Length: 336
Image (cartoon, rainbow, N blue to C red; front, side, top):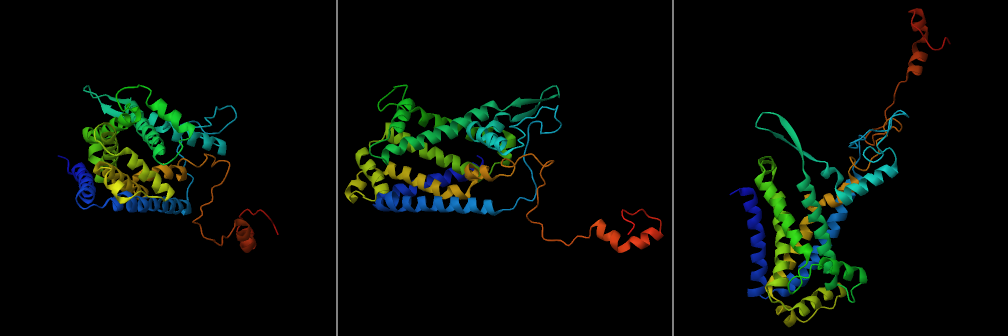
């Protein structure tokens, strides 16, 4: 067994065991259902803000936008305004497509050596498809949980839930986003384990968020379709977290330990998020490879790290040594 993902898997199992022991044996529902979620939310927003501010304060010594098209050049050469943006509008358009459609990942290729020794390049279409499914289904799942925090539920969230349960299978009706999220996480995990080149560079920190998100999705599905928890009390608790009107401890104790394992996983993810690779969610907007225009031929990029330097221009040099230059027969711009 690969030790890297075994440690991550073991860490998630330990987290589940901690929540189960704390709620089922020690009666710490207040800790896992109220105190830790509050701490996690504060830690998430504070950590997110600190990371973004740290990146925003970082200087950009070079103008290094990544390009995948023809930049602005001579008038008769066609310019790719999105893949090699020259204006701010082009940068915004490229950032939009990158965030919404993962455009650069769609055009990602993988090299392989054929049996006859020739090299070929394949489009990583499955990686793009499952990465897109992972991010969008995770986003839909988060939005669907609005019914636990809002009363009454706004119309857009009701429409989203009807679309998500369009298949009308089972009881409770199966939510397509939940199982799609589970499948996408499994694909990303299998890819890291199956492909030798990806497995070699993968660290425990790459597997941990996958196992943690898988645990969140699995416990959520388990609660919805298999475990019997007090849904009314669970909603009363979650609504109480945002309205600061918590239910009685007796109601909290009757919800079920699976619910608190699920909430604990979410709390750990919120605390872990700002200090992990998951921060690419915010970092992409501050990446100089994405948020800068490819206009170095038209606009000079001044390095903010440059300190003031007293330069000696040619004009000053000539003023200092003009007579000697004339005597030596060297050409000068000005005779006097």
